[in-house]
Amino acid sequence: MKKIITSANAPAPIGPYSHATLINGMLFISGQVGKDPVSGHILNESIETETTRVMENLKGILTDAGMNFSHVAKTTIFLTDLTNFARVNAVYGSYFEGDFPARETVEVSRLPLDVNVEISMIAVLA
Image (cartoon, rainbow, N blue to C red):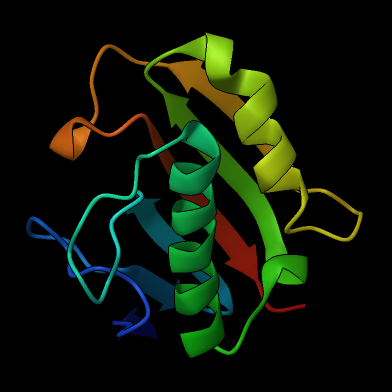
């Protein structure tokens, strides 16, 4: 059975997609950017600030689905500049307590809303 997850703790989607879809205990979270769900502003004063907002948006969606970062099995990180990899990685890694999920990080030419980082996740209730 498919269930759509919509979270007040993440910015509203900017297109025809859902925050996440839950199917048979697997949560597929759409890519999140550093947009504040309350103010609607992109928080990009630094790559660390932007990445923190991305991770908080993902945390809100996970929470609303009854999960947390320990349930994350796979992530994809999109960066517009791989020279930011170490700084993004430091923030990203601080949200996990070990047993890190599988992941790839790729550089792209541009992201929606001209952000610098976007992260998507797959989480599993186990």
